[in-house]
Length: 125
Length: 326
Image (cartoon, rainbow over all chains, first blue to last red; front, side, top):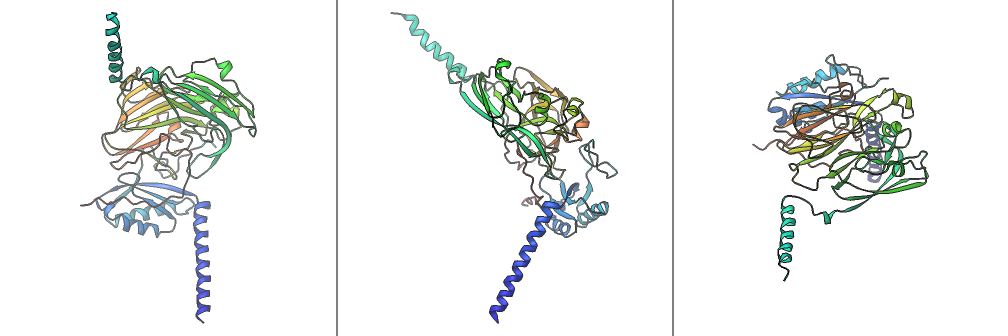
Protein backbone atom coordinates (compact mmCIF):
# COMPACT_ATOMS: atom_id res chain seq x y z
CA UNK A 1 0.00 0.00 0.00
CA UNK A 2 2.84 2.38 0.94
CA UNK A 3 4.56 1.58 -2.35
CA UNK A 4 1.41 2.49 -4.29
CA UNK A 5 1.05 5.78 -2.39
CA UNK A 6 4.68 6.60 -3.00
CA UNK A 7 4.36 5.87 -6.71
CA UNK A 8 1.21 8.00 -7.00
CA UNK A 9 2.94 10.85 -5.17
CA UNK A 10 5.96 10.65 -7.49
CA UNK A 11 3.71 10.70 -10.57
CA UNK A 12 1.77 13.68 -9.18
CA UNK A 13 5.01 15.60 -8.48
CA UNK A 14 6.28 14.86 -11.98
CA UNK A 15 3.04 16.13 -13.52
CA UNK A 16 3.13 19.32 -11.41
CA UNK A 17 6.79 19.96 -12.29
CA UNK A 18 6.05 19.58 -15.99
CA UNK A 19 3.09 21.91 -15.74
CA UNK A 20 5.28 24.46 -13.94
CA UNK A 21 7.92 24.30 -16.65
CA UNK A 22 5.28 24.70 -19.34
CA UNK A 23 3.92 27.74 -17.52
CA UNK A 24 7.37 29.34 -17.31
CA UNK A 25 8.09 28.52 -20.94
CA UNK A 26 4.85 30.06 -22.08
CA UNK A 27 5.62 33.25 -20.15
CA UNK A 28 9.10 33.53 -21.60
CA UNK A 29 8.32 32.52 -25.16
CA UNK A 30 4.83 33.73 -25.97
CA UNK A 31 3.94 36.57 -23.63
CA UNK A 32 4.42 40.08 -24.92
CA UNK A 33 5.40 42.40 -22.08
CA UNK A 34 5.41 46.13 -21.64
CA UNK A 35 7.19 48.05 -18.93
CA UNK A 36 5.78 50.89 -16.88
CA UNK A 37 7.87 53.15 -14.67
CA UNK A 38 6.45 54.55 -11.45
CA UNK A 39 8.01 57.44 -9.61
CA UNK A 40 8.07 56.72 -5.86
CA UNK A 41 7.92 59.11 -2.93
CA UNK A 42 8.19 58.08 0.70
CA UNK A 43 10.68 56.26 2.90
CA UNK A 44 8.39 53.27 3.21
CA UNK A 45 8.72 52.53 -0.51
CA UNK A 46 12.02 50.76 0.16
CA UNK A 47 11.27 49.43 3.63
CA UNK A 48 7.91 48.03 2.44
CA UNK A 49 9.09 46.85 -0.97
CA UNK A 50 8.90 43.15 -0.16
CA UNK A 51 5.28 43.45 0.89
CA UNK A 52 4.51 45.65 -2.13
CA UNK A 53 6.19 43.20 -4.53
CA UNK A 54 4.33 40.25 -3.02
CA UNK A 55 1.02 42.08 -3.48
CA UNK A 56 1.80 43.12 -7.04
CA UNK A 57 3.02 39.71 -8.22
CA UNK A 58 -0.23 38.18 -7.01
CA UNK A 59 -2.15 40.36 -9.51
CA UNK A 60 -2.81 38.57 -12.83
CA UNK A 61 -0.94 40.21 -15.67
CA UNK A 62 2.05 41.41 -13.63
CA UNK A 63 5.26 39.51 -14.38
CA UNK A 64 8.10 41.35 -12.66
CA UNK A 65 8.71 44.28 -10.33
CA UNK A 66 12.09 46.00 -10.09
CA UNK A 67 12.88 48.45 -7.32
CA UNK A 68 16.64 48.41 -7.75
CA UNK A 69 17.54 49.49 -11.30
CA UNK A 70 16.57 53.18 -11.11
CA UNK A 71 16.63 55.14 -7.80
CA UNK A 72 13.19 56.18 -6.52
CA UNK A 73 11.42 54.26 -9.28
CA UNK A 74 9.64 50.96 -9.62
CA UNK A 75 9.68 49.25 -13.00
CA UNK A 76 6.71 46.95 -13.51
CA UNK A 77 6.46 44.52 -16.43
CA UNK A 78 2.89 43.71 -17.36
CA UNK A 79 1.23 41.56 -19.97
CA UNK A 80 0.90 43.80 -23.02
CA UNK A 81 -2.23 41.98 -24.15
CA UNK A 82 -4.13 42.86 -20.98
CA UNK A 83 -7.59 44.09 -21.99
CA UNK A 84 -7.77 46.40 -18.98
CA UNK A 85 -4.27 47.82 -19.06
CA UNK A 86 -5.12 51.26 -17.66
CA UNK A 87 -7.15 49.72 -14.82
CA UNK A 88 -4.20 47.47 -14.02
CA UNK A 89 -1.96 50.52 -13.70
CA UNK A 90 -4.47 52.01 -11.20
CA UNK A 91 -4.39 48.78 -9.21
CA UNK A 92 -0.59 48.93 -9.08
CA UNK A 93 -0.70 52.49 -7.76
CA UNK A 94 -3.30 51.59 -5.16
CA UNK A 95 -1.20 48.64 -3.98
CA UNK A 96 1.77 50.93 -3.42
CA UNK A 97 -0.28 53.71 -1.82
CA UNK A 98 -1.74 51.22 0.66
CA UNK A 99 1.80 50.77 2.03
CA UNK A 100 2.34 54.53 2.46
CA UNK A 101 4.41 54.64 -0.74
CA UNK A 102 3.23 57.39 -3.07
CA UNK A 103 3.47 56.22 -6.65
CA UNK A 104 2.61 57.88 -9.91
CA UNK A 105 3.20 56.87 -13.48
CA UNK A 106 6.43 58.46 -14.62
CA UNK A 107 5.96 60.72 -17.59
CA UNK A 108 8.99 62.50 -18.92
CA UNK A 109 10.64 63.52 -22.13
CA UNK A 110 12.09 60.02 -22.44
CA UNK A 111 8.81 58.20 -21.89
CA UNK A 112 7.74 56.09 -24.82
CA UNK A 113 4.11 56.53 -23.76
CA UNK A 114 2.20 59.73 -24.49
CA UNK A 115 0.42 61.67 -21.73
CA UNK A 116 -2.84 60.04 -22.74
CA UNK A 117 -1.27 56.67 -22.06
CA UNK A 118 -1.02 55.73 -25.70
CA UNK A 119 2.17 54.17 -26.95
CA UNK A 120 4.12 56.56 -29.09
CA UNK A 121 4.57 54.92 -32.49
CA UNK A 122 8.16 53.85 -32.81
CA UNK A 123 8.03 52.68 -36.37
CA UNK A 124 7.03 54.10 -39.70
CA UNK A 125 4.95 51.08 -40.56
CA UNK B 1 89.20 62.70 -23.43
CA UNK B 2 85.90 63.41 -25.13
CA UNK B 3 84.23 65.44 -22.34
CA UNK B 4 81.15 66.17 -24.49
CA UNK B 5 80.25 62.48 -24.40
CA UNK B 6 80.41 62.55 -20.62
CA UNK B 7 77.63 65.17 -20.56
CA UNK B 8 75.60 63.76 -23.45
CA UNK B 9 74.61 60.43 -21.88
CA UNK B 10 73.25 61.83 -18.61
CA UNK B 11 71.53 64.57 -20.59
CA UNK B 12 69.76 62.02 -22.78
CA UNK B 13 68.80 59.96 -19.75
CA UNK B 14 67.48 63.08 -18.07
CA UNK B 15 65.35 64.00 -21.08
CA UNK B 16 63.86 60.51 -21.32
CA UNK B 17 63.18 60.49 -17.58
CA UNK B 18 61.57 63.92 -17.80
CA UNK B 19 59.37 62.87 -20.71
CA UNK B 20 58.34 59.78 -18.77
CA UNK B 21 57.43 61.96 -15.81
CA UNK B 22 55.39 64.18 -18.11
CA UNK B 23 53.46 61.10 -19.28
CA UNK B 24 54.99 60.50 -22.70
CA UNK B 25 55.33 56.90 -23.72
CA UNK B 26 58.81 55.89 -24.89
CA UNK B 27 58.54 55.58 -28.72
CA UNK B 28 60.72 52.50 -28.51
CA UNK B 29 57.88 50.86 -26.58
CA UNK B 30 55.28 51.31 -29.37
CA UNK B 31 53.51 48.02 -29.87
CA UNK B 32 52.37 45.99 -32.83
CA UNK B 33 48.82 44.66 -32.64
CA UNK B 34 47.64 41.70 -34.71
CA UNK B 35 43.92 42.37 -35.28
CA UNK B 36 41.84 39.79 -37.13
CA UNK B 37 38.16 40.03 -37.92
CA UNK B 38 35.71 37.83 -39.77
CA UNK B 39 32.76 39.06 -41.82
CA UNK B 40 29.75 37.22 -40.40
CA UNK B 41 26.30 37.39 -42.03
CA UNK B 42 23.97 36.48 -39.16
CA UNK B 43 20.79 37.33 -37.26
CA UNK B 44 21.12 39.53 -34.19
CA UNK B 45 18.67 40.63 -31.48
CA UNK B 46 17.70 44.28 -31.97
CA UNK B 47 15.15 45.01 -29.26
CA UNK B 48 14.00 44.05 -25.78
CA UNK B 49 11.37 41.63 -27.06
CA UNK B 50 14.06 39.55 -28.71
CA UNK B 51 13.20 40.49 -32.29
CA UNK B 52 15.85 39.36 -34.76
CA UNK B 53 17.37 41.21 -37.70
CA UNK B 54 19.40 39.86 -40.63
CA UNK B 55 22.63 41.73 -40.02
CA UNK B 56 26.03 41.82 -41.64
CA UNK B 57 28.67 42.05 -38.94
CA UNK B 58 32.30 41.97 -37.93
CA UNK B 59 32.77 38.92 -35.70
CA UNK B 60 29.04 38.33 -35.26
CA UNK B 61 28.08 41.42 -33.25
CA UNK B 62 26.77 44.90 -33.94
CA UNK B 63 28.83 46.92 -33.34
CA UNK B 64 31.96 44.95 -34.13
CA UNK B 65 34.63 44.56 -31.46
CA UNK B 66 36.18 47.73 -30.05
CA UNK B 67 39.85 47.92 -31.01
CA UNK B 68 42.19 49.80 -28.66
CA UNK B 69 45.78 50.85 -29.33
CA UNK B 70 48.11 53.69 -28.33
CA UNK B 71 49.26 56.56 -30.53
CA UNK B 72 52.25 55.33 -32.50
CA UNK B 73 51.34 51.64 -32.36
CA UNK B 74 51.25 49.50 -35.48
CA UNK B 75 48.12 47.56 -36.43
CA UNK B 76 48.48 44.47 -38.61
CA UNK B 77 44.94 43.83 -39.77
CA UNK B 78 43.40 40.80 -41.48
CA UNK B 79 39.82 40.47 -42.71
CA UNK B 80 38.43 37.04 -43.55
CA UNK B 81 35.32 36.64 -45.68
CA UNK B 82 34.31 32.98 -45.19
CA UNK B 83 33.29 30.91 -48.17
CA UNK B 84 29.89 30.40 -46.55
CA UNK B 85 29.04 34.10 -46.94
CA UNK B 86 26.97 35.37 -49.84
CA UNK B 87 28.39 38.87 -50.24
CA UNK B 88 31.73 40.64 -50.64
CA UNK B 89 32.97 42.72 -47.72
CA UNK B 90 35.79 45.13 -46.90
CA UNK B 91 37.29 47.16 -44.04
CA UNK B 92 37.93 50.90 -43.84
CA UNK B 93 39.69 52.10 -40.68
CA UNK B 94 39.28 55.86 -40.19
CA UNK B 95 42.31 55.72 -37.88
CA UNK B 96 44.56 54.67 -40.78
CA UNK B 97 46.26 56.92 -43.34
CA UNK B 98 46.88 54.48 -46.21
CA UNK B 99 45.96 53.91 -49.87
CA UNK B 100 42.26 53.02 -50.01
CA UNK B 101 42.32 51.44 -53.48
CA UNK B 102 44.79 48.81 -52.39
CA UNK B 103 43.71 48.25 -48.81
CA UNK B 104 39.98 48.96 -48.55
CA UNK B 105 38.94 46.97 -51.61
CA UNK B 106 36.12 44.45 -51.30
CA UNK B 107 36.95 40.76 -51.07
CA UNK B 108 34.69 37.94 -52.17
CA UNK B 109 33.51 35.05 -50.02
CA UNK B 110 36.42 32.68 -49.48
CA UNK B 111 39.06 35.43 -49.60
CA UNK B 112 41.14 37.34 -47.05
CA UNK B 113 42.91 40.67 -47.11
CA UNK B 114 45.66 42.01 -44.86
CA UNK B 115 47.23 45.41 -44.44
CA UNK B 116 49.25 47.34 -41.91
CA UNK B 117 49.02 50.89 -40.62
CA UNK B 118 50.43 53.05 -37.87
CA UNK B 119 47.91 54.81 -35.63
CA UNK B 120 49.57 58.20 -35.93
CA UNK B 121 46.84 60.37 -34.41
CA UNK B 122 45.10 59.88 -31.05
CA UNK B 123 41.33 59.76 -30.94
CA UNK B 124 38.18 57.73 -31.41
CA UNK B 125 37.67 56.59 -34.97
CA UNK B 126 35.02 54.83 -36.98
CA UNK B 127 35.67 51.59 -38.84
CA UNK B 128 33.24 50.12 -41.36
CA UNK B 129 32.78 47.95 -44.38
CA UNK B 130 33.28 49.77 -47.66
CA UNK B 131 31.98 47.13 -50.07
CA UNK B 132 29.38 48.47 -52.50
CA UNK B 133 26.71 49.52 -51.89
CA UNK B 134 28.45 50.91 -48.82
CA UNK B 135 25.22 52.46 -47.52
CA UNK B 136 23.75 48.97 -47.15
CA UNK B 137 26.84 47.40 -45.57
CA UNK B 138 26.89 50.12 -42.91
CA UNK B 139 23.11 50.10 -42.42
CA UNK B 140 23.14 46.34 -41.87
CA UNK B 141 25.70 46.61 -39.07
CA UNK B 142 29.24 46.37 -40.44
CA UNK B 143 30.86 49.00 -38.25
CA UNK B 144 32.71 49.56 -35.02
CA UNK B 145 35.17 51.80 -33.20
CA UNK B 146 38.92 51.99 -32.73
CA UNK B 147 40.29 53.93 -29.77
CA UNK B 148 43.79 55.36 -30.18
CA UNK B 149 44.91 56.44 -26.71
CA UNK B 150 47.23 59.48 -26.62
CA UNK B 151 50.88 58.61 -26.00
CA UNK B 152 50.91 61.42 -23.44
CA UNK B 153 48.73 59.92 -20.73
CA UNK B 154 48.47 63.29 -19.02
CA UNK B 155 46.97 64.99 -22.10
CA UNK B 156 43.55 64.80 -20.44
CA UNK B 157 42.08 63.89 -17.03
CA UNK B 158 41.90 60.24 -16.17
CA UNK B 159 38.43 58.77 -16.67
CA UNK B 160 36.83 56.71 -13.90
CA UNK B 161 34.46 54.97 -16.25
CA UNK B 162 34.44 54.51 -20.02
CA UNK B 163 31.85 53.52 -22.57
CA UNK B 164 31.78 53.17 -26.34
CA UNK B 165 28.47 54.24 -27.87
CA UNK B 166 27.85 53.96 -31.60
CA UNK B 167 24.75 55.52 -33.14
CA UNK B 168 23.24 54.17 -36.33
CA UNK B 169 19.95 54.00 -38.21
CA UNK B 170 17.99 50.77 -38.46
CA UNK B 171 15.96 50.03 -41.59
CA UNK B 172 13.07 47.57 -41.33
CA UNK B 173 13.96 45.75 -44.55
CA UNK B 174 17.71 45.07 -44.77
CA UNK B 175 17.42 44.50 -48.52
CA UNK B 176 15.64 47.81 -49.29
CA UNK B 177 18.59 49.89 -50.42
CA UNK B 178 16.26 52.53 -51.90
CA UNK B 179 14.81 53.15 -48.42
CA UNK B 180 18.36 53.67 -47.16
CA UNK B 181 19.01 56.23 -49.90
CA UNK B 182 15.66 57.88 -49.08
CA UNK B 183 16.48 58.03 -45.32
CA UNK B 184 13.35 56.04 -44.42
CA UNK B 185 14.75 54.52 -41.25
CA UNK B 186 12.63 52.65 -38.72
CA UNK B 187 14.74 53.45 -35.65
CA UNK B 188 17.84 55.25 -34.51
CA UNK B 189 19.83 53.07 -32.13
CA UNK B 190 22.86 52.94 -29.87
CA UNK B 191 25.15 49.90 -30.06
CA UNK B 192 22.85 47.92 -32.29
CA UNK B 193 19.64 47.88 -30.22
CA UNK B 194 16.39 49.84 -29.98
CA UNK B 195 16.29 51.50 -26.51
CA UNK B 196 19.06 49.07 -25.51
CA UNK B 197 20.11 51.19 -22.50
CA UNK B 198 16.62 52.48 -21.56
CA UNK B 199 15.52 50.76 -18.32
CA UNK B 200 11.98 52.13 -18.73
CA UNK B 201 11.49 49.88 -21.76
CA UNK B 202 11.05 46.12 -21.46
CA UNK B 203 14.38 44.36 -21.87
CA UNK B 204 16.33 47.61 -21.68
CA UNK B 205 19.44 47.97 -19.55
CA UNK B 206 21.32 51.09 -18.45
CA UNK B 207 24.75 52.61 -18.12
CA UNK B 208 26.03 52.76 -14.55
CA UNK B 209 28.29 55.23 -12.77
CA UNK B 210 28.90 56.50 -9.26
CA UNK B 211 28.21 60.13 -8.37
CA UNK B 212 31.38 62.17 -8.78
CA UNK B 213 32.97 59.86 -11.33
CA UNK B 214 34.32 61.19 -14.61
CA UNK B 215 32.43 59.23 -17.24
CA UNK B 216 34.07 59.19 -20.66
CA UNK B 217 31.95 58.25 -23.66
CA UNK B 218 33.71 57.41 -26.90
CA UNK B 219 30.93 58.25 -29.36
CA UNK B 220 30.85 57.28 -33.02
CA UNK B 221 28.11 58.13 -35.50
CA UNK B 222 27.96 55.26 -37.97
CA UNK B 223 25.05 56.80 -39.91
CA UNK B 224 24.68 55.91 -42.66
CA UNK B 225 22.94 59.26 -43.12
CA UNK B 226 21.68 61.05 -40.04
CA UNK B 227 23.52 63.59 -37.92
CA UNK B 228 23.58 63.19 -34.15
CA UNK B 229 23.00 66.03 -31.68
CA UNK B 230 24.51 64.36 -28.65
CA UNK B 231 23.08 65.69 -25.39
CA UNK B 232 22.99 64.57 -21.71
CA UNK B 233 19.60 65.38 -20.22
CA UNK B 234 20.06 66.94 -16.79
CA UNK B 235 23.76 67.54 -17.36
CA UNK B 236 26.25 69.47 -19.46
CA UNK B 237 29.28 67.89 -21.14
CA UNK B 238 32.25 68.96 -19.04
CA UNK B 239 34.50 68.45 -22.05
CA UNK B 240 34.09 67.40 -25.66
CA UNK B 241 37.05 66.36 -27.79
CA UNK B 242 36.41 66.41 -31.53
CA UNK B 243 37.48 63.06 -33.00
CA UNK B 244 38.59 62.20 -29.46
CA UNK B 245 41.87 64.08 -29.84
CA UNK B 246 42.88 65.76 -26.55
CA UNK B 247 44.15 68.72 -28.61
CA UNK B 248 40.58 69.50 -29.71
CA UNK B 249 39.11 70.36 -26.33
CA UNK B 250 35.80 72.15 -25.84
CA UNK B 251 34.36 72.98 -22.41
CA UNK B 252 30.81 73.27 -21.07
CA UNK B 253 28.91 71.96 -24.12
CA UNK B 254 25.17 71.28 -23.91
CA UNK B 255 24.76 69.51 -27.25
CA UNK B 256 27.37 68.59 -29.81
CA UNK B 257 26.76 67.64 -33.42
CA UNK B 258 28.54 64.55 -34.70
CA UNK B 259 28.08 63.90 -38.39
CA UNK B 260 27.76 60.49 -40.00
CA UNK B 261 31.22 58.96 -40.21
CA UNK B 262 32.56 61.16 -37.45
CA UNK B 263 33.23 60.71 -33.75
CA UNK B 264 33.98 62.58 -30.55
CA UNK B 265 34.83 61.85 -26.94
CA UNK B 266 32.54 63.23 -24.27
CA UNK B 267 33.38 63.66 -20.56
CA UNK B 268 30.69 64.22 -17.96
CA UNK B 269 31.01 64.31 -14.19
CA UNK B 270 27.62 63.59 -12.63
CA UNK B 271 27.61 65.15 -9.18
CA UNK B 272 24.45 63.64 -7.72
CA UNK B 273 22.66 60.30 -7.82
CA UNK B 274 19.87 59.94 -10.33
CA UNK B 275 19.07 59.17 -13.95
CA UNK B 276 20.61 61.14 -16.81
CA UNK B 277 19.34 60.09 -20.24
CA UNK B 278 21.81 60.57 -23.06
CA UNK B 279 20.11 61.18 -26.39
CA UNK B 280 20.42 62.47 -29.86
CA UNK B 281 18.46 65.70 -29.63
CA UNK B 282 17.24 65.05 -33.15
CA UNK B 283 14.09 63.90 -31.43
CA UNK B 284 12.69 61.69 -34.18
CA UNK B 285 15.78 59.59 -33.52
CA UNK B 286 15.69 59.70 -29.72
CA UNK B 287 12.05 58.71 -29.41
CA UNK B 288 12.53 55.90 -31.91
CA UNK B 289 15.36 54.25 -30.05
CA UNK B 290 18.37 56.49 -29.34
CA UNK B 291 18.06 57.01 -25.59
CA UNK B 292 20.71 55.65 -23.21
CA UNK B 293 20.09 56.28 -19.52
CA UNK B 294 23.15 56.86 -17.33
CA UNK B 295 22.13 55.95 -13.78
CA UNK B 296 24.37 57.42 -11.08
CA UNK B 297 24.22 55.40 -7.89
CA UNK B 298 26.73 54.79 -5.05
CA UNK B 299 26.61 51.03 -5.64
CA UNK B 300 27.19 51.19 -9.40
CA UNK B 301 29.00 48.11 -10.66
CA UNK B 302 31.74 47.89 -13.27
CA UNK B 303 30.62 47.38 -16.87
CA UNK B 304 32.43 46.55 -20.11
CA UNK B 305 33.17 49.22 -22.73
CA UNK B 306 30.11 48.18 -24.73
CA UNK B 307 27.58 46.63 -22.33
CA UNK B 308 24.98 44.19 -23.65
CA UNK B 309 26.79 43.45 -26.91
CA UNK B 310 25.50 40.99 -28.02
CA UNK B 311 22.04 41.58 -26.53
CA UNK B 312 20.94 38.46 -24.64
CA UNK B 313 17.33 39.29 -23.80
CA UNK B 314 16.15 37.55 -20.64
CA UNK B 315 12.76 37.21 -19.00
CA UNK B 316 12.32 40.20 -16.64
CA UNK B 317 13.23 39.39 -13.06
CA UNK B 318 11.91 40.87 -9.83
CA UNK B 319 14.68 42.88 -8.19
CA UNK B 320 14.84 44.18 -4.66
CA UNK B 321 16.89 47.13 -3.45
CA UNK B 322 18.83 46.39 -0.25
CA UNK B 323 17.25 48.33 2.60
CA UNK B 324 19.84 50.67 4.20
CA UNK B 325 20.92 49.56 7.64
CA UNK B 326 19.58 52.04 10.26
